[in-house]
Length: 77
Image (tube, rainbow, N blue to C red; front, side):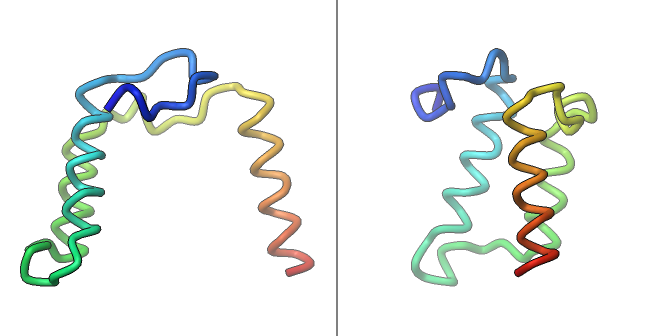
């Protein structure tokens, strides 16, 4: 999983990355019966896999620039 991480990302939690990868893999199964997850279960899995500190945006110029672009898209979109 660590090979797909953005190289500009300074740090990440490998356990959380793997948990998110597993959830994403489950969500992308073509057959609905293979997925076996409801949105409630996905939400629950994400909440239990992530620590609260990992959900806080870091002070990154790129993050803030992206948020600004997205906010403008909503205004003018």
